[in-house]
Amino acid sequence: MKIAFFTDSYHPDLNGVVISIDEYANMLRKKGHIVYIVAAKVQGYKEKDPYVLRFPSFTLLHSDPNVMIPLPLPPKQLIAILKLDIDIIHAHGNGFFSLLGHEVARMKKIPFVMTFHNLHTEYTHYFFKGRVIKPGMMAAFLRIFANMCDGVLTPSEKMRQSLITFGVNKKITVLPNFVNLANFTEQKKGFLHKKLKLSQDIPLLLSVGRLGKEKNFPFLLNAFKDLTISNNNAHLVIVGGGVDKEKLLNLTKSLGLRERVYFTGKIQIKFMPLVYADASIFVFASTTEVHPLVVLEAVASGLPIVAVEDLAFKDVVINDVNGFMVPLDTQVFSSKMKKILEDINLQKRFRDGSKKIIKEGKESEELTDELISFYNKITQGFSYKKPTRPLVGDEFVKNFRKRINQINKIIGIDEKYFKNIFHDTVVAVKKLRDSF
Image 1 (tube, rainbow, N blue to C red):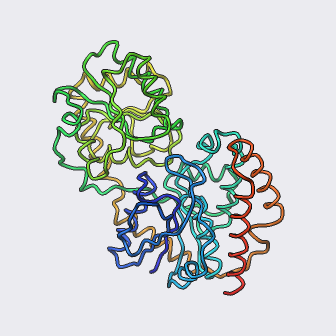
Image 2: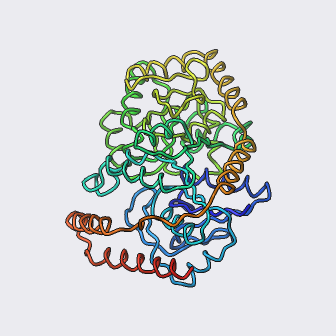
Image 3: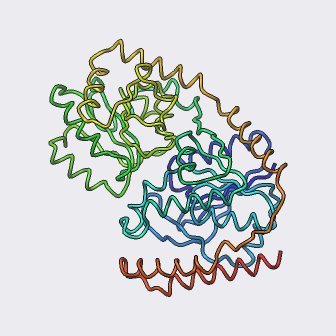
């Protein structure tokens, strides 16, 4: 089978979506399938994979990752992708490149499916500080986009239930993320201790994630502050970069934790197994996750877990088997970290529990076979139907222009800049659609 992934986030960005795309693409290719990846061209980044197609784009929002919009594609570039021999388009990210994938699929009269990786209703604070795009608007967008698809995938039951709540009436298939277990077993200890110049006997509490509001790191810092009242040995290490780094550094300082908390920034993916291997406990306080790969990686590394109660961790973190699931209460969270740190036998039981859970879960090959089966069902039952109404109608244009005016007032970008890009894109797509 020939598959094209259209993604709104890809290298050099590094996040759960990018890792998931790479893992599934690699497994599909090992099984003899052809996988193209269509993503934004990033200035200064040289693409080495001939099956990754980069297209000109501009940055609408500087965040982590950036929000990219494909520029109106020159006819040669768009025709080149339209001429690709592909059976199905699989979009990731629910943004502008996913919309481009939808248009290409309709022009080629092939199925279009999408994985909804993120609960975007929890991320609207990145869009002009939440003053333009509201959670309700995002929920409506996800509903409309999902109902346009020929097949819908989510990595967890939590995301499936969320889409149903938003009003999605398509069948939704759950296909979890996976990790390459071989990368996270039998790793040497010492990487983080050496990097941070700490004695090897100091226990490290580890958390990994983007430094953004949705990850709830202030809660984690306050819970750790409670722990330090009775524990003068453990240190907290937070791996990741993001827009809230300065705020978190200031909070760390105000809590008197500068000597016990470390922000490492981003660490190359090849070193992450060594990072997990050197930790005593993995701690995670976000309630906005869908199926976080960092928690899967921590479990695959055999770590005890302390996380807040959330459906996203179902079957991955099991209370009193490989860790604790706790309410969003800093004192309760702190007490569970303390309990694990003070009980060597409990640490061993939870480590063994994590290893057992990850081994009993579905492996990469089984999950990839499920994805192939999903593709086959979609393609076999697919018949092209001309849309009864255009994707871009008069009402959409009216609302779009209204939003342009709001954006212009907030950030001062010339309204014509957006209007011209929008108009040129619509005209180009309509012309090419008519020619196929």
